[in-house]
Amino acid sequence: MKVRLACFFLLSAGILLVLTAMAKFASGLYGADRILDKMEPLFLLSYKAFFLIFGCLEFALSLICFLSNNILLRSVIIAWFATSALLYRISMPWIGYHRPCPCLGSLTGAIHVPPHIADNVMKGVLAYLLIGSYGILLYQWRENRKLAVGRLELDRQKT
Image (cartoon, rainbow, N blue to C red; front, side, top):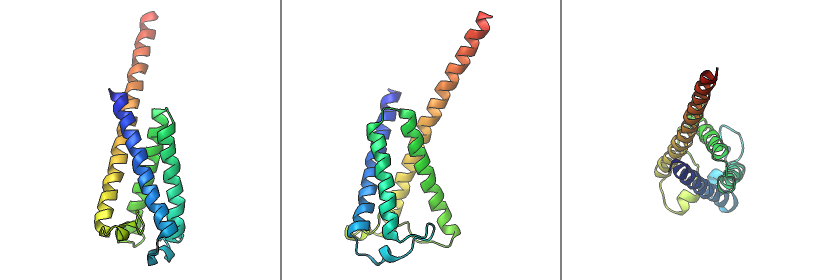
């Protein structure tokens, strides 16, 4: 049952990554908002380039979620990505950026979603990815630890 739950999470993480990648592609390729010409404050790229680069990254990660059978690999990749996104969000106020994250690009304006609502939704997605991936990694670590302790006990009994 726990493997099925992990596989469900990793599949849903892949779906979320595809959706956010599509939003970034749509914004970067077809968006007409003024923000696309502005510089993203941390990476110092235009938002258009930023959306296209990170859309590609999210799409590549989603492919790993869909195509790999290795639960540990997929969990580590999602944990790495989610941790990086969290660090990005944490660092923005430090450099003076205090607006909602434009994570979905100009798509929020096109579908008439206020930026603060889209920002809160993306915070929820980030929390889901963090909790799910680290939960799987913690479970895997505990199971491996139990196996190691069991092997030590067997070795002690043999000697």
